[in-house]
Length: 207
Image (cartoon, rainbow, N blue to C red; front, side, top):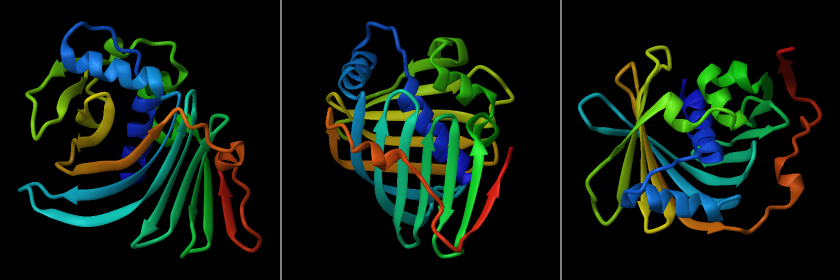
């Protein structure tokens, strides 16, 4: 479930075609205009139903619109999630195991539509402006479909830079992600989005 959340959040960044005039949305549009490619460090925190922080992890991610990202967990475990060409690779180094899935099977139909860019964001989400909190502009995206599996997604912007995300699912679980050292417009080496299973690992691929 956590992996689906991460992919879902990345699909939002990959495909957000927002049209609005209020300030937070304009900041988001400004960010996306510069973020055809992006790299950043992240810290991810799981929060329980009463607000207590739990498992914490960190790493780096790379993004290139449309449709490519690499999400590398470095602490406290090593895992790679690489999306390219409509497929997602999950590599758990500790388990020496690779799983490959089609993107739409990994995240469900709505995120797949977001990735395609063929359906405007407003078709799938209600966009609500939130109050400025701790210097960040916040937007709340509420799915219009009851089958999405998510209650809402929050996007936080520091000026025109993505600074944080929060996702609440229908099971009461909350995932918060904080970004730092965000660099936009720096195109990663194409090899960043290529994945080849290392020799000797178990590979499970869904056709």
